[in-house]
Image (tube, rainbow, N blue to C red; front, side):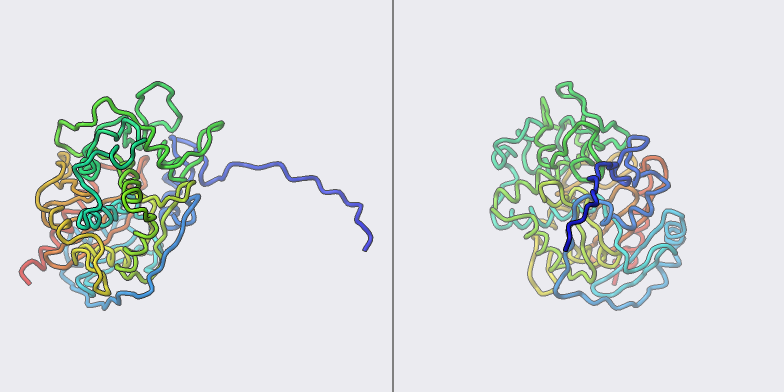
Length: 398
């Protein structure tokens, strides 16, 4: 065959990924109010790096609707807003209530955001029960090269959001690097490590552990007793779990997903080093998140009878310990979960919540997407949890 004389010029023109580029309000395009709902409904396709996990055996759910739930005015209100995506109430293996927004289907995955953090209760709880981790030890015992932001804190402090350092969980903070030593580092900087936005021009991509190790503190002790919420705490806990056991976080995660018996796919974001992002990177269907809540309601007993986490640790989590909530949030933060002393669960940025009640074997999953400027209001999730408390109260005397 004769050689072609056609010459092709190499393609050199590229543009930043339109979803991940920061365009306004220090937010990537996917997180602008006009785009946020579509993104939360398809977040597994938004993150730069992710994997999916499926369970070999599924917990089948039977639908037996309890009309009392749907008749509650507060349920009608939270499922009737333009924010609402999905809600499922399940007890044992029965669906008692289920509702979806017109633009969201039962088979669709939704971003769980910080509900992802609750997996650390199972991971660390199991290691404590097997005497592989001592919660009274300082972080530097397990991570000798960690920075001053965590070195002197105990593992228990990290679990309870009880550490003071220069990280600021402020969704309005700049994502530009401040070169001043000890300068506050905002949440938007962490989104670079999460793979949810591109770094500023001229700056290289960095991993979640690099980011957590770079944080600094003159004194990690929280003297207020109130929750000092910091997402990098979760990265520290996962890092400790790997170091203490020699096992990868993926191995822990597979155990949790198989014990949960999800029907669809659990998606989890990765950082540039391939580390699962438990700080906020998980996505599941509403039914599967209810199944995940049921795992906590069963005190960590898996669908095949195996245990993940620790029943004793889950009970201790909700015994009134932990850091106190703020004025708008009456519940505490204990062992990587929110709890009011009865239920335990977790909220997520933008309007998500998972609640589990071991006393009644009930779990509730809730997805929504706040479309204000920063996808955050102080009173929204406390209002949701008050509604959920009324729901589980229906089954308290059964």
